[in-house]
Image 1: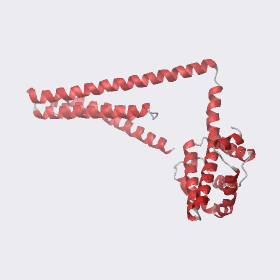
Image 2 (image 1 turned 90 degrees about the vertical axis):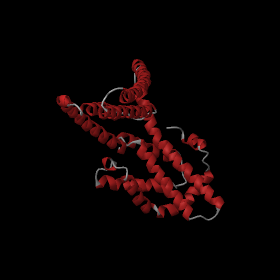
Image 3 (image 1 turned 90 degrees about the horizontal axis):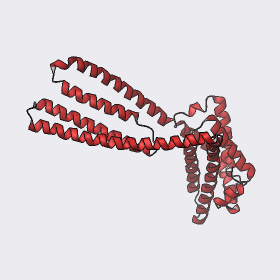
Image 4 (image 1 turned 180 degrees about the vertical axis):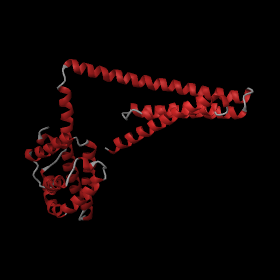
Length: 302
């Protein structure tokens, strides 16, 4: 953990601001029970909070500690012991696997709650601004120290690797980036050919003796494939920006291609067997897409 004096220097946190927070403590202490009730209403909205607060005993102990932390936020004494206690809280979060997203979101609530109280007790503009600045700084410093536990945990894992392991890891990351860009380029080519297929089907519809109903269904099928290709490119762009791999989009493209075949074969009485097989495959793909969607939704809620 960075030296606490250096931390306060970086945030330009002054002794005057510490005194301002100390003066706020009696008011915040009166609001502590309300804070706990509203804080719990907020974190239960995360969806997976019960995974970390498994029973009433843990919840009771957690409420006591959160309340003590909240009151101590306005203690006016911010020395090495204070910041070490915050750092240890962060270490516990790392140990239980609490996502940093939960921590950041919870601090948004803390910030909003405290600032709302300051707004409701407005006296004069100058004092109002000083209180807001002091509160913003102490909350940001707390969040900084808490999340440093996560950063040091990740750094520790990397530093524990041997030189060979680090080299392999770096090479794999570079190769993965190359594959992702190559995939994006390949998808662009596929979309280009999908446009060509659509144009070709339009040509067949208007300039050959193909039956109009078959021609229209063929054009619709090509349009569906083109739409799925564009959707896949869109998902790959999001993947390159750091989001998850869009396996669902690939399934969607496969379904679009098969549905195109169904549209074409539906007018032929000789393709009954092929239609049945394709229908079974489409159902299997639809189930796979549904399962992938559920898994993605659950991951987003974590």
